[in-house]
Image 1 (cartoon, rainbow, N blue to C red):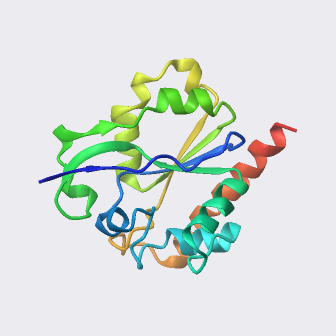
Image 2 (cartoon, one colour):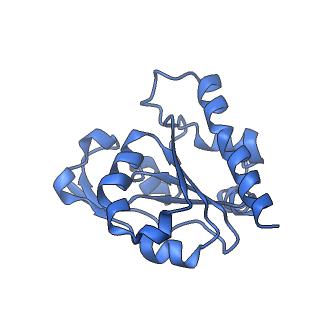
Length: 178
């Protein structure tokens, strides 16, 4: 098994919504870009929702993301895994990212969306119980269907419809601040 490390968060001080994956896959690690696998639907969906189209250069997609009030990160800082599948992560090797520091420096975050089951399960198991209760008291946590090509059980249309929640929740969070 190979020891792999995630990327730093993509964020801005004003973000109100956090999207969490589990750990970048092999294509993403090679490219040093979130969701770089050509069949992963993340950027296609975010393209429709906020204009972060996969055709845009990566830095422009990240600007669209933070400009829309969204942050992006992974639950895991490091783990051992062969290949790209979440199911191949050695559960004993998991080290989560430092969410206490992240949330302290991003106090406007009200909503956390998980890109699939592994992201949610890892966060609840390795992060949530370690955070002070007042950190997450006002946050809402929502699992969305994974954008991974391995999630063949969900059509693109069904995933897009589920992911629309991000826009509604983020708008409500931003409106509550004004």
